[in-house]
Image 1: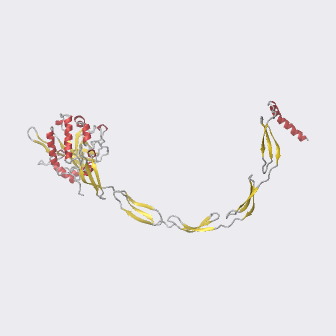
Image 2: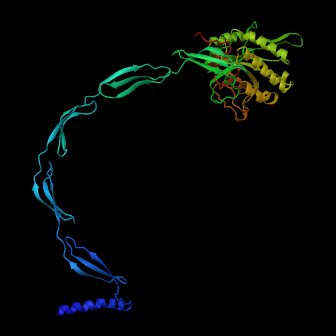
Image 3: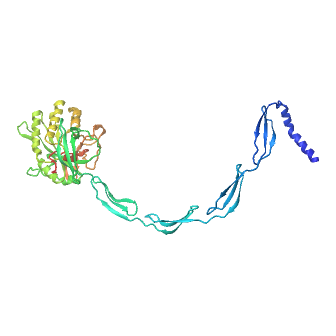
Length: 475
């Protein structure tokens, strides 16, 4: 009894704050209720639930007893690895198992898997009931059985050895050689004119394929500008001034071997200049005294050659005569580089720009009409101040003479080891650049040479298009 009073006192003490709080709340009369029916389940009784619509008060009435489980049975057959049983289950989730049976034996089916080139073979035992499997009678992979076929390299197809396995789809290549590419030779060439197209026919010397293309004026004569800035070839230009004389006055040959060993691969030979007489009536000009000797010796040494003509012509009549004379000197020879019109003599400086520009066009176009690749040699002063540069650059190649400003004259010879770069102030990149007139070569003492860079592959183009004495090969 004493414990009861103690518990009662604690309950009153704990509920006292709630009583104080409830005193401050308005009382609900519980006059309106909503009811809902809670159906009985297999494990809990049902009832009517009454909820006050104005507060959280609720109560229950009209209790109904819980229902019984509705059990349904399902037989689970045994497998090779699990026991069987009868499963009794109610819709409410309650279930239990009875009537357990032992697992059954595996029922194996055998399959023979033969070996492949890369995979082992075996006998596979697979249970038809549970799909458990294991292997026996392991046979090692057979390995590839390759068959080799050699494919010869052609102009357009790579060469290689192809290995294919006799037993599978494996294919691989070894000893691959890139395609050779066509080796063209011209069999027919018709040079274009300003108004009519030309034609180029080439055959491949390796595969006999034939290719025909129409040639238009701009394809062959695109103008002076070139895109390439890499030096392709190095060479010299020579005349009588690079030759010594013996006691009798005969000119001695150049040491072409020394030039070759110095890295020079081409030479532009002076063919000659305008035939004329001096004030005393003495002959001047004409063919350069060493032109024929230089042509023969340089060819024998393996040099690619071009030529230039130095003009003193002041009239169109003299200019046309110069051309006729030059064509005679060139006849029967082959040149891998252009034939240049050398326009720079001070005696012509007083002529007007229009006339001098027209002289360039006449001379170069006459060379073209006669099957030569004509071009212009001149220096920066003439190109800027005495010629119509835009017309010249759009019409012909230019061999440009301009020496770096930091080069010392006469006391600082230029060796072949010294490299120069096209100056940013030079304007358009041109096909050939004469970068010094004070070059020296080991083995050729006391002689100064003009050194040149080329940025255009003249030999390939001139041979292909049959300029300068080159003829189409026989079909």
